[in-house]
Image (cartoon, rainbow over all chains, first blue to last red):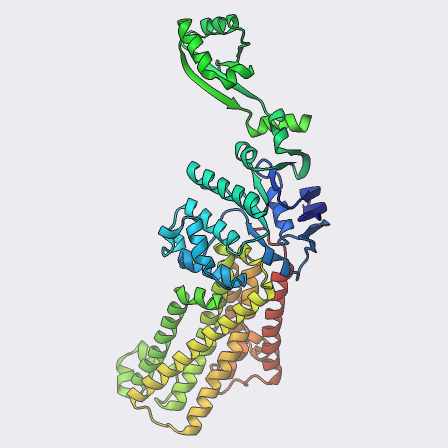
Length: 302
Length: 254
């Protein structure tokens, strides 16, 4: 099956600055592909090139089998997108903003605006001016515009921006459902490793404008470290008790004890019980994970 | 339709309508003052200002004044309509939502120009309607069918030329990605139009042509010839085409 996105040798230069450098990408139908990168890595420029908003200095893009170039617009009826921070006409209501989007997309028949309002849980805010809604609801409105016409391909730049944890989980479930139940292919960018790990089926790591690594989500665990971080009032005694129990505690720069043993990570309650029994109960017990920078260093170095 | 909905909900059409209402009322005030020479003398500076609109308080003078308002005030008001229609998409970051749609970008640009034209037409109709009402209330002399047709045709032609000259302002608001560059170009055009017309070369500078055509420079100034009108049409067409090409081809990275 032909890839839904086929980008070959994409490069974008702004004067002496190379924002994206020789990036090639093939995204298969039904995939949830995450472009993971630090801020300024080139994710948004890549997404804008995929959507025909920015013309590559060199290289080419095909979306759903159509070459992206100025003047080609038919293919966009099958694509939904959200680029960077969501924007809306502030003096129009949420419903009117969606009506404008529906007309521009040529959506006819049924009640697409009402349906997407219900689906994105915007009913309470539907008749409120878009300029007065919270950042989280503005993000929902942006997603509603992207989903309004039931696209085959979704391109989302930082879709979890501005959402509270419940909103993030809700959007994650929605995207998961669209991909698995409706076969929608999704390309998203993010700088939040845990979010990407939960949603994506394949991950492209972008660093300084280059696609440095692609990996299946199932391989992500092999590239990230987790550990149980333990603190107690008597760190020395706690360390001795843990060592005696067969763990391998390591003192971190922050003065905590780090246990990388699988048993400690999977069963922190056992560690807590052990420390209480040893007379040095834990004051802090947290499973921690690499931050994005550390992950990058590991992936880039490997 | 989407552009009409956006325009309807904005304050800009109402503010520009208010500006033209005030302009028509000021014209009426000047006619009221000029109707009585003693009144004009007793009002000092205001009377002097009123006399600049013409010597007589009659229909030909008032209709000419409305055409001059359309030329000078219209450049500012019509220009602001264009700046708002195009610049807002960048100032409010909504332009990116117009770029990857099944609707061609050039169609969106054309729709904006159509709405700009309709807004300016509505403003001109409002100015003329108010002018006719105010003139009737004041009981101005010199009304005839020929005077009315000639006066209103001058207003209509002046308005058409002024609207055409705002298309480069739309380009500036687009390429400059916001309202301010558009306003800057608009102000520069108005300033240059005044200076170049004062130097006597206005008939060759498109932005001076509507004011000269409306008779703002007085009977001593030569009216713009065919060359001036052609230059206005060329500027209008070039502004539209280049704006459409810019939307179609330029990198949209903000």
